[in-house]
Image 1 (cartoon, one colour):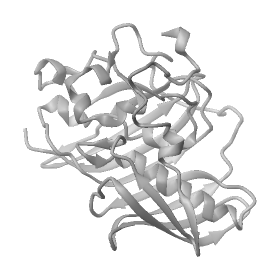
Image 2 (image 1 turned 60 degrees about the horizontal axis):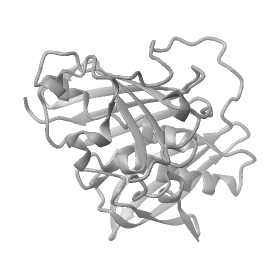
Image 3 (image 1 turned 120 degrees about the vertical axis):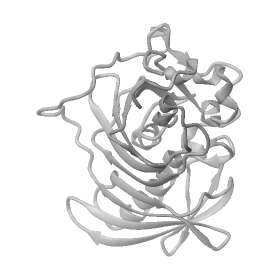
Length: 282
């Protein structure tokens, strides 16, 4: 494993998705509107992945903010998922709501075939480069251990098509759903990195939503749509694996929350995300 640290995975057989940066690219059409194409390779169950959609929104917002602001990195992305788009062409409309020296706020809306699919707000600014004065982060190895499971080699890979474009490893300890158990806490640990390129803040947005639903550990399988997702970017990631700790505070009826903490190879906090989602009944 250590021989691949700091490098994108370029093993044969995983090139169909194309680089994440290319797949999430947006093209300006003028007047704050951008075109993008949602690849079928960056999907879950045939629908574009929520974290991937956040990255598309963030790229459009950063481009819109960059025309009038001195700095433009994504600092936060908050999105409401109105309906799931299909793979294919989409439009992203942006409106700069505030321009400041420290932060610029951009409203974003992803449309397909005349319907609004995802609406949100992106705050841009300058990501800090210095180390945190204080942090309290999950205790997780910087690289996946030898018993970590390559998601692309599991049956779920046919649904979890993200593994065509990124390397995702799951800690089997605590992932009782893999063995038919339904009594493990809704908590999972993973590692991820893009194939063929380095991690960056946009990929960190995807990583904050890359886990399979933690409610799998409660025996709740099936379609699990995200209703609202907010991600905070905290720093630029160093090359190597991103480690992801996903936890849940409560499951009430069909509703559950999911909190992800994303840490880079140097132990620096990169992204925090929280979502509200619907789960299937056990």
